[in-house]
Amino acid sequence: MDIMAYTQSRVTGERQERRRSRGHRWRKETVELAAVFAAVAAADLVANVVVHGHDGPVLLVASAAAMLATALFRGWLAHRHPHGPPGPAAPPGGDAMTPDEEPTVLWRLRTSVSDAPGSLARVCTALAELRVNIVSMQAHPLPDHTVDEFIVRAPGALSRTDLAAAVAAGGGWDIWTDRADAHELVDVPRQVLALATRTALDAAELPVALRQLFGRATIRQYPGRGDGTPAGLEGHLMRLPLPGGDLLELSRPHLPFTPTEFARARALVELDTVLGPRVPAVAARIGHLDGDELTVRRATPEDKSAALAMHARCSAESLRRRYHGPVKDADRYLDHLLDPRHGQTLAVETSDGRLVALAHLMWDDEGAEIALLVEDAWQRRGLGVDLVRRMAALALEAGVRTVYAVTTSANTGLISTMRRLSAPLDYQVEDGTLVITAHLAEATEKLPTPWPTSH
Image 1: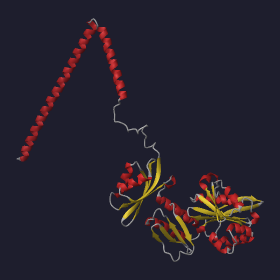
Image 2 (image 1 turned 90 degrees about the horizontal axis):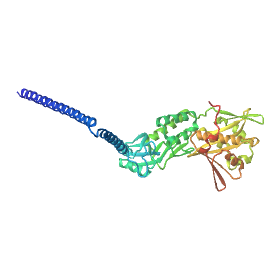
Image 3 (image 1 turned 30 degrees about the horizontal axis):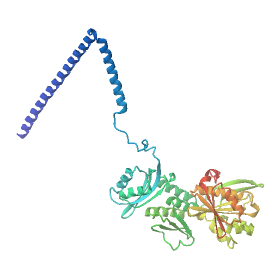
Image 4 (image 1 turned 30 degrees about the vertical axis):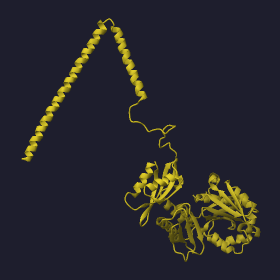
């Protein structure tokens, strides 16, 4: 019964709706028809006045003028007050600046967030409210929370304090910020693979790879301390035993290491351990000096005998300038210098296999030390300049932008050679020792290709 009553009620309602619709349609059509008759009557009246009236032509001209004035007024009004949604408000004192025109800067940002759904979203929302664009992001999971690291592009007017405050408002803590540059816009997994490849090809690349992986970190290598020290991570300090018994220690006071970073560093060291000492077979011809053809190449531990023979042919003064004092144990020096894990050593070889010069590029914190020894009979022939410029180019290839040489003010030959780098130099004198530091960024285009015959 209820269904039948509902059906009857629905049918009745539909009938009433159709009747109302028909009535509304008839009323609309009647009004339109009346408007047509009224317009025809008005047009006939105007035509009779214009044709038969005394002032008909005047009335026609006045009507045309009134219509033209109305059209002009509407055009002027539309120009002064355009229709459509309002545009963005211009800042006081100038025109509006689009996001593409606004100057921006890159920041590296790291923050801790709770390991809960929505935590990262709140930080991202807080950054978006300041028009901060996230360029890249990686997560370092910890047992009770997560450390998120970002490369962001922020408006140039946004200060470091405001950026950190926005992250804190989004729920972040332990916030660290630092300016970044375009070189840091790299995919992290691809960067790790590229560094692993460089380490696999050259044992000297391990400290450089770790520096590029962790940024501004201090890296020190302690001979003989690795056997009794296990690998470990303690906040800002990372310890990694190396093959041969040395200990590699990384410290970063401004930012603690994460377990993820420790795992990456340990993987690189394990790769270096498995592959063992290795030096790429690269070489270049220096040219003919007094009829002798010379070759510069990477030195290996197998060159120790030839290097000792070269030391025996060098004068005491040349050895003193190189080692800042008498050489009592050349064997120990050469074992360290020819080990590829401590840096790169270049050797200049004659056509009969004799070594006449050795150059060393040794990694040290954020820079690299260069040292040079040329046999007396081969000095002042341009070998020193060639080797120093070649080592500077190798340092730039490894991402090291400063090299320095430790000598004395009496070593005018090395001072002159450093000046031939065409790079800005800093001089520091302390206790009779002169340290010359070259900033290589401005000399990039002036330095040679280290191994032009290697490809």
